[in-house]
Length: 441
Image (cartoon, rainbow, N blue to C red; front, side):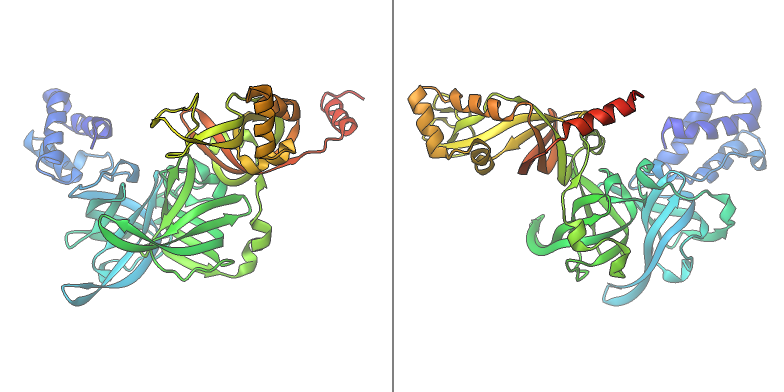
C-alpha cells in the first residue's frame, strides 16, 4: 500500500496509542508489516497496537482495500465487494477435473476479475455483497486479478454496506457502458452490442500460434473493433451481452478484447437496431472525437479551411512508400520513385478542427483529373505545385462530409478518408436558424 493509502490507518493507530508513539514510528512499522512480512492490514494494525500496550478493539478505520488500490502480486488482501458476475467452470489440474468460479467483483472505485479456486466456497450470486479475507492478486495483460485460494474466507454482508459500482464513461474500470463511452484501460465491462463482422485469423503470441476472432461491433452510439481469444461462435448480426473484457487503444481508437473467462450471452436480435442500420458511418462532432481520442467508421460534416503543403502530385519511394523530396527518401536516400496523388487538408465543424488525409482515387475524383493528366499539367508548368493550387481552388471553403477512421497521435486527430461528399447548404434556412438563436425576429 502507498503512504497515502496507509495514512488513515496510521492516524487510527496513533489515536489509540495517544502521544506515546511517534507517527513516523507507526508508519515505519506498518510499512514493514505490510511490505516485508506480508501481514494482512488488520493483523498488522492490531500487532502494532498490542506491541505498544494499546487496546486493538479501539481501532476503527476500515481495513478493507479498495479495488483501484490493488497491485499485482499482493499476498493477502481483505475486500468488501459486490458480485458483478459469477460463473462456474470445470478445469483440468494435474489430470483431474476441478470446479472453480470466475467472474467480476466491484466496489465504489471500479471492478476487477476474480477466480475462486474452490467453487464450494463461493456460492454467491450477482448483486450480493461479500466480505473477503486473505485473497491474493496476480497480474495478467497489465491488469490485476483477484484470486481466492485455500486461505481465503468469504462471507455475505448486508447489501446496504456497499454502494453499487460506478457506471458509464466516468468509470475508471468497468460499469455499464455504450460503445461511445469506451476508453483505454477500462475493464470488467457490462456492454451489449451487435456483431457487424467477424473472421478468424492466426497470430503468433510469444512463439505460439493462436487463433483470434476479430471484427467490428456496434450499438446505437457507434462502432469499434473487437478481438475474441475464444471461439464463442459469433456470427454477423448476433446481439451479445458481455460482462468482462478490457479496452486497449491503437492510436487513440478503443478496441475491445475478451476471452473464455468473460461472461458472454447471445440475446434476442431485436434488442438493438438491425445490422444494416448500425453498419453505417455515424455523424459525430470533432469535439466528441477529441473527447474519445478517435473512432472507427465515423463521418464529420464541416468546411475545408486549409489545403496543406504536400498535397497534390507527390512521388513515393519504391522501397518504403514514403514521399520523396527532390528525389531523396528520408530513409533510403536517392531512390527511384513512383508518382501518386493525395490531399492533406483541415476540416472544421465549428466544434474543432481535424486533419484529413485523402488518397489517390478520391483526389482524382475531386479534381476531375487522372494522375496522368496531372503529371502532364505539372510537366507543362515545370512545377508540381500547380496541382496543389487546383486543389486549393476546388476545396477551400467547401462544405463536405468526410468518412473514415479517426486516429490520434502527438499531433492530434487525423482521419484516413474512405469517402468524401458535398454538403448542400440552404443559405436562407441556415441564416434563419442563426437569427432565431440570436433572438432576432
